[in-house]
Length: 353
Image 1: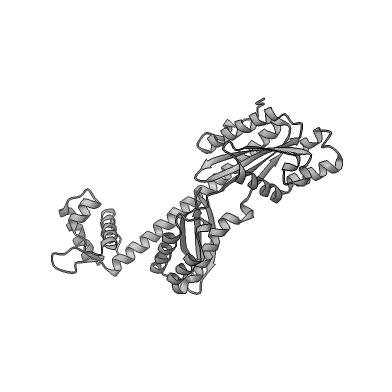
Image 2: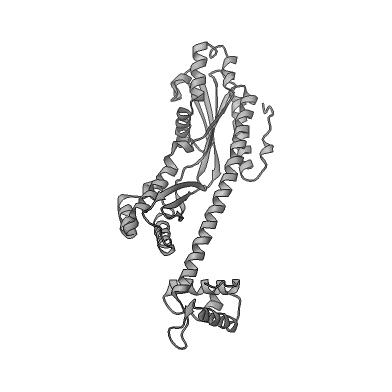
């Protein structure tokens, strides 16, 4: 297949896209009006070259052109390469953002512990709207396909799917169109048995791939491994007589450092948080029983696109609530600004009381 220059590629793509939409032969004037700032004469010359090269054909005299099998092959190969590039770029961006976010959250939680002299924790941001934004499958090798599911907030989940034989590009394109047409904009709750059955029927012999992609969608939302909790200041418990008893302190530190119960508690906080995002849990208000002698104050931060997380401070019931609330509001605001473009160094270890 001969390499095409940029202008010919654009014109060929325009012809194919127009033909896919209308089913009618495409003329030079249609391309000129709809796609390019070129004269009809220039486009006709390029179309003649594309016809000579075998990418398009004129079905009738004086009619427009339609793509040949060779033209479709060019379109599919380049479309798949473009989508693979988009996914790779998105993954690279997410890896970069993840590293910066982890550093920022560790800084925030340390600042809170130092400023308040209480224990502090923060749950990394997660997707709450759970809508599918984009799905892409691509060949890894002859027996494996990579599924990439992107949710709102650009949360990415990869899954390697085993296949009996390699998938050609036309099949891959059809499966990607099937998945995106049916799943884009849906939440997990929207994906019902009827939709799944219909998608599997359309996928035919490739129904297992559809099933595995749907599992990736579910895993993106429910996988506990994605719940990152950062903590700091556990030794501050010893500063308060009512908490410094050896057994109490041991239980508190164990509960504080046990990530899963903390994550579950904070997620419950996120689900019930009010408009201000500030909640105060005194004694048995907290679902973590070993913290019955403590107060827990939390603030929910939002980063847009259905993404939010929670900051928490744990101390004795006689904590300085005014100082804690000031610190939480300040750090919540700075965190949101930092994620939206301000440098993380704006969050400094200073006493805000």
